[in-house]
Amino acid sequence: MGRSLRERRRRSQNRFAMMSISTVVVMLLVVITFKSIELQAKNDYYASREAVLNKQIAEEQERTEEIAEYKKYIKTKKYVEEVAKDKLGLVYEDEVIFKPEE
Image (cartoon, rainbow, N blue to C red; front, side, top):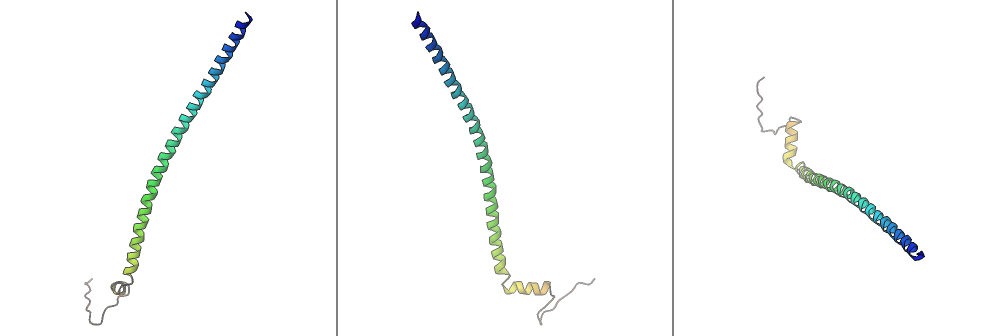
């Protein structure tokens, strides 16, 4: 009879230990699942942010090219002539200007 009481206690302790381990494993799975969902959301956010930043980089590179082209253009004789005519009202000696009547 003494042996069966010990066996019952062992079985009871084994069940308790198995239930405790199972509870811990389930809790870990829940935590891992929530963290996985959280990380996926962050990953999606960062992917969209990366796309926006890459688009901005492309736009700035295009703008840089336009500025470089404009820089070349302002060094040309044509640009100097346009500024002289438009802003300063200068003309060549043999050039005739017609102004509309007001």
